Length: 172
Image (cartoon, rainbow, N blue to C red):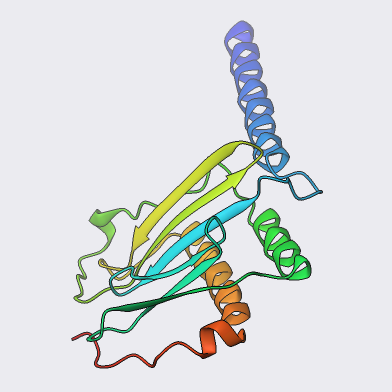
């Protein structure tokens, strides 16, 4: 009996140690100093046609009935550092959960918002995709959505974005 209890305690300690290692590994993915290869793209909105893309230094605006408009832009060093710090706070890793358990939600909506992220850090690519089709998102998706809103708030103040045409129409 004592051997079984000892084995159970040992197993529990092993699980806790491995879990702690995995959490440190997720945080270690994002070094304090921003990597030189840091870039990202996020497509978002009702049809995912809006995009902020640092790979190509472009922003795309969904004009709804009038298609899309694209323009060049660039973040300042301070802005990109601030975005990186926000990503470190999440932290970006393989451990982010984007899947909503459909058995818990019976709601379905049309149209719905969606987001598609590609992030490169230290030679590693992270892809995250989710939608609000089933009226819910995970906590990790909410963090990335808040990050995207933070980034968009920077973009919408730039002259390049302000000069884009207004959207015409809407999604029903």
